[in-house]
Image (cartoon, rainbow, N blue to C red; front, side):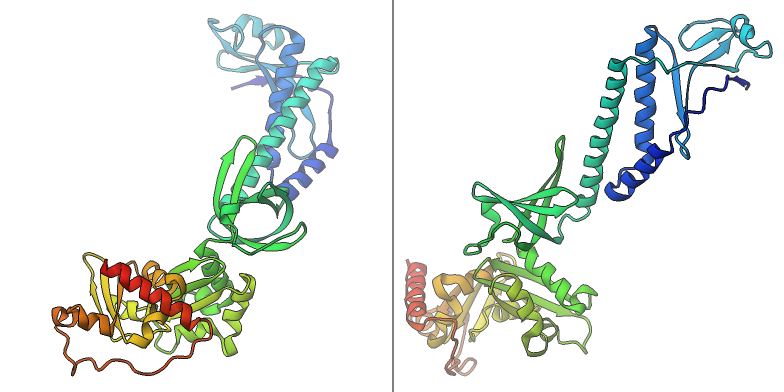
Length: 401
């Protein structure tokens, strides 16, 4: 195939290439994409300037920015599309050596572009840059979805917060995803969990959370080497943000204590996470594949007499000594509620006395020799005995009703 073209003036534009190199480095916008947009813009501008149908081709040198604009037609025996094709006879008037199948290229002078045409070309280029910037931002943050990142509080938007995430990208911390009691002011640094990234015509829409249970999990991944490396696995987590979190951990390495690894020496690791979430309490328990054993662990710090779990119905009955009932249920039912979320079981907690009076002992076939009850007193500073006792009595009464 033979191509004929007349050399145009070397419109070298090294400054353009240098600027695009910087744009690619700083904003991740590919240079070739912008150059292709410029070629398209110049092609449209040329067609507008000529005022008739012409197959215009623009070729920009990727190294020095030099460009050439020419009309391109395929040489054919019989012309069917006069825009894209030219007859052998007409082509040979330009170059006698051309034959069917060759491409004829004729240079087009572009020095006389009107101001309107040039402005339109500029608009196309600017639009493409914005499109590529939005695409680059979306790709950068979709990769961070389900991760935690550090941002800076930018401003309040009603009851929500706009968080600067970097690269001129703003995330929204909606009121429903804030932790009760946490207050932030502009310029405050804050760690957030990216739970959703959407691609929109105005750029990526990024929603973040301080309330999500995964925030705590990801913080432990950052703080605990064994969790980050997969030696210790966080099997389940339940959270009431601002108050308490329960987390079940496990490991296949018999030499590792998974709970101890997460707690750290003198509580250093768990305290680092607690500090990051505003002093929220964290209970770390050992995971167990046996549902009854897992439920018993999940009700910590309460001690139980026994657990009867129905895996099919995902329900469980738990009997505790009378002096452990309030601790098992927790203030306003929180301990039982978190244990249920953690294990996936609906948990019915009974005191030993109520279980005997209701005939539950006989129903379950429990003998006094089998379970003597737990009589050790507890001392848990985080719980108010009087309030817990009232909660426990109310909970049992509701169960009976």
